[in-house]
Image (cartoon, rainbow over all chains, first blue to last red; front, side, top):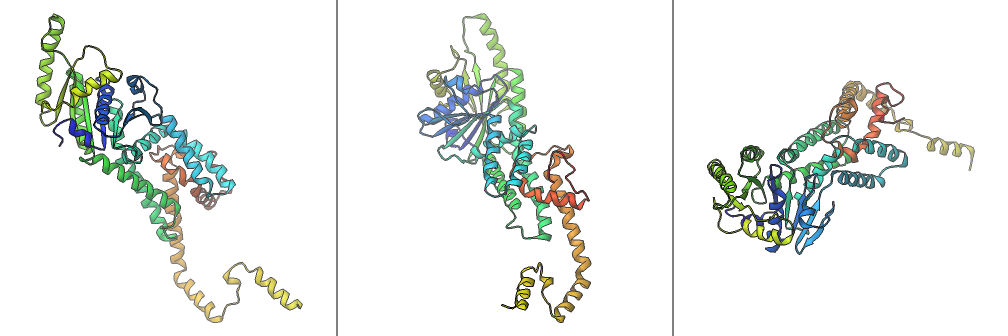
Length: 313
Length: 106
């Protein structure tokens, strides 16, 4: 287990997740910046359909990697775009293999299937899988700024599910081929086999404690604490390594303002609860800053706070 | 070239299967016994293969019968290969034309 947040930079894949509004994008961006300044080539990927990394870096980011800063690229995954690209790839792939008549019918079939509900999510999943497998070798670290917890947990469960599904399919196909013909040359079998191989690689990387970790961001309040506890349970159940917890927006201890003091008194109770409930996990507290975080300057400041050597654990 | 040679050449060119070749009595007898011994067995195998084939088709085209298929997108590039099997299926089921509007075949 990593003993500091700085050590997390050495991973290949990092996820930042948590309840909506706790500062996932902010922390993920700060971490990406810290890693890029430490000499890693970083790709910051936003999987939340409501992207906000472009607002954070104050420049447009699209569905393809865009250079943001030295060593740092940004990418905002778009389901519709991925699904279109996937379909275009498939059509291109089969173009040279089949005759005109079959192509016409197959293309109709493919367009129909691609418009099914779930196709976009599936294409998105495929892209994330490719990124996690390290398909793009321009990057040392792929850092995901995820959508709120529920969506992400499903995404993490998906390779397992898909693998089982494809395996059942290829078993059925093999049983049939065993009778009729050789399965080493069957194009359907080859295609299924390749998918299976990719899914296996995806899952292996996702579950490897050496290469992948999940960072949960929360604030010291009732609901985020409960959601974090649930997320940790489910992630560990799925076999994903928890890299650490970020307790965001911790209020200053002394304040002349009675309102802030009252908030802080309540917060202390929750902070104690966090210490008690998440004893085995690495935790870092990020103080509430005087201004909100956007743009490179404030991000750098936050990055310093995130990966400072002294952590509470 | 005489007519007899031409006829022989034509006959040779229009042969469609190995059964069109003149075969020796020995081969005929061998084929007969092979059929008698294995015919039923091979038929059983063919039926079994057809059934497995149908199962596979069902798994690939689940949406058509209203079941969600998590792997739809991953099957896109095998669809063209399956069209031929789909054709065999609807013929086997005694339908000259594709019964599914969403899956045009013939």
